[in-house]
Image (cartoon, rainbow, N blue to C red):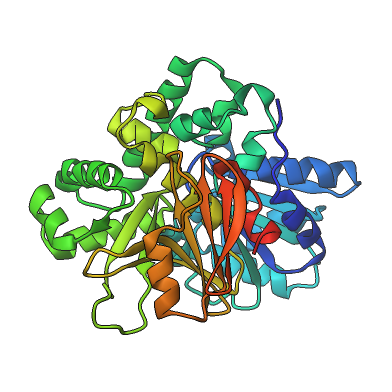
Length: 397
């Protein structure tokens, strides 16, 4: 079954713009699928297209040319060019700039899996000449297009990587997740860190997965992994720049009791997290059930963020906390995630935050059942089901 990706609605109109459209995201989130889908749509609309995947040897060989020959190859008899894994292309930015500045009126779509490599290959400024789009795993709404996988528990355990939706066999899904994880370590990481640090890097990845949603101290990670804090910081930067983790910063307005420089880290997909932990048990039978739901809400919100929004968490030295603080035009909106059946009760962290910050817009508690909204300090507190996170920032905020 082919799942329609929502991001297509954003990418399709970019064909009329001269800028280079760059798709960035981790491996296996569907970048190749999106490029091929765009290619087929434009071809059916009568446009001349060329598609190259630079991880395919036969395609890569075609790029073994000098810059003038490459320019001619990519601009002859074509309207739209697609280049998958373009960071393998030497002097990509120079070539893209030359095509953009020419009178050829050719559109380029390109994809990559590592912002570290992308930045290396875009050393020459493409300011004003590129449109960058982050590609994520399937959202919960996209995932639900396949009826057999519509139960949220499946999404919590196996995640939203598009390649998994074609398999109902759980052993096959676990195998694919393991292979994606191994490919990431073997292809992306080995080229970025020293061979002797691979095992330590794997241990760090495990600790991040195990402590997902908890405040992480570099010194503690360094002690457990056996590396310096500086090296741990470097490895965390690699994980962020290969789109494997999302760092979440603490919200603070300089109150003395707030944690100002603390971080939480979330892996980009629950299926990958469970593959790292080697735990694919049903959520109802797991001690980390709350983290699975919190991770679901976090990654869904992260995908929906608009340019005027920022996602953080709040924690005080006394232990008061709010799971997520969405800053909307710099004003906070609060999110709390619960997995137990309880009455209509405002979490203590939300009450204390609103008392400290009366400019707070409102709050939502994601829980097992929808409940009537209530007011606290004239702020609406909603109680929604976890599934209501679909399009939450458009529908509710």
